[in-house]
Length: 226
Image (tube, rainbow, N blue to C red; front, side, top):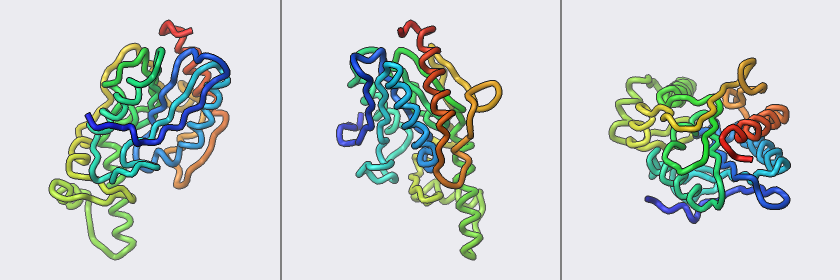
């Protein structure tokens, strides 16, 4: 297991002893930047309701000194295992989008997932962004040519340097079953709010943040966390 001790963690604590600690696993790559402000608002709402909330940097992301090209999904899974292992008391893992691809190996009391997505879908989005950028620069590329190149070299996709191992693992990755689990989407049948990960720039949805915190708090009681 690769140590995560040098990675930054944003932690917001409640007044008094926490009911439990919610570990936020953000979306992957650029989607993490687009949702971070709203996730931090959700963390503050959770703290106001008696939970501790932790948002760890993944190796190769945000303030990490690790090059992203040295990272793959397995390393991210190991990193989360280490984060949760340091937590006293019950831990709830709350994953958003691609975060659900790397959360299943931790030892948690419960898992909560918002709009989980498969790795192949994320990869296609990154590849299409590269094809579009290449076209605007006068370079000819295609999904097929980029995927072929990714088998043997680091590929730059939407500003992310992805190793052959990362690309291969993303291609096959799906959210794994865990229990107890609450898996929901955004919209009338899920969390009311904006799919911020689809925006071109980072955004903020305070109402969505409150809805996320409320849902986690209410649902946690059904998992025996009070």
